[in-house]
Length: 380
Image 1 (tube, one colour):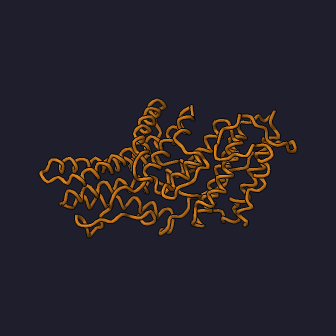
Image 2 (cartoon, rainbow, N blue to C red):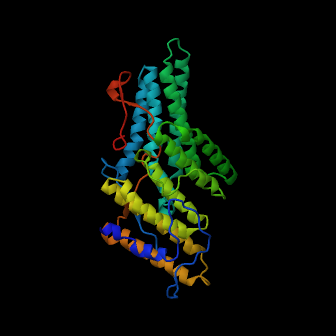
Image 3 (cartoon, rainbow, N blue to C red):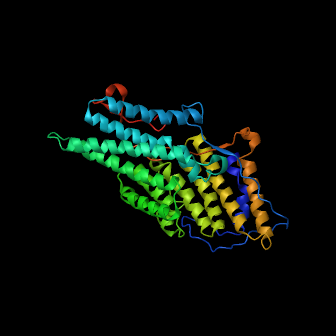
C-alpha cells in the first residue's frame, strides 16, 4: 500500500499538463510547459547514492567480482589440461561466456544506468583485458572446432551447436567492446555500427533471451547516434507486456526507450511513460526484492530525466519550470533514496545480470567428456 502511494504527487502534477499515455508512446512536442509554482531560484539537488543489488550467494561486491574473474580462469586451466577435444571446446566457450555474462556485468549495469562517472568511472584497462581474454578463448575454441571438423568422425550436430554458441558470443563481445571501451570518435562510430549490424541476426534467434539481449544491446549502440530513430525502432513500446523469459533485457530496454523519448525532446512524455511503466512492472516482477529494486531503478531514470530537463531549461525564462523539476526530484529522493533508510550505503537498483545470456554448457570438473550441466543465473 505504501509503495503504491509513492510518486503520487508527481502523478497528480503530471496529469494536469500531460495527456494520458496509453500503449502507444508517441512523443509529445518539445517545450511542454510545467505547472506554475512560486518563482524562486532553483538549485538542482545532488543525485542520490545508489549501489547495485547484492548478488545472491556472495558476501559483498568484491567477493562477487573476484569469483567471476577466477571462475573463467579455472575453466581455461581445465581446457589446457584435458586431452578430449570436445571437452576443450566446451570449456573455452564456457569461459568466454562467463566473462561476458558475469565478470563485466557490474560495468555494463553502471554504464547502462549512467552511473559510470566520477569515482564510479569504468576501469577501461581491466575491461579491455577481460574482453581480450573472452575473445582469446573463443579463438581457441574455433581452432579446436576446425580440427574436429577435419576428422573422419566429426560430430556434425555438436559442431553446429558450438559454432552457433561461438558466433553468438563473438557478436556480443564486439557489441560490449564498442559500447564500453572509449575510442576516437570516427573509429568509435564505425565500431558501433559494425557491432550493431553483427547483432541483427541474433534478434531472430530461437532463444528468447538471446533475441532480447541482441535487441537491447543493438539499441544501446544505436542510441549513441545523433538520430535516435534507429535505436527507438529496435525497441518495443515502453508499455508492451514484459515476457519473464526475456528478463532482464526487456526491462532495461523499456527504460532505455523512455530515456530516449526524453532526450529526443519530450521529457514530459518520458516521465508519464515511466510512471505507468513502474505501475505495470509491479505486476510483471513477482519477486518482492527484485520488484523493489526495479521500482527504484525506474525512479532513478526519472531523476535523470528531470535533471536533463532542468539543464535544458533557461535559468532566466523558465524559473517556474526549473523549480518544478527540483521539487519533483526532491520528492523522489525523499521517498525512494532516503539515506536515513539506506544507512548511507545507497539504495539498491536492479542489475543487468547476466549481461549477455548463458548459451554455453559448462562441464563439471569431474565430468569432462561425459556429462555437462548448465549453470544457473544465481550460481554461475
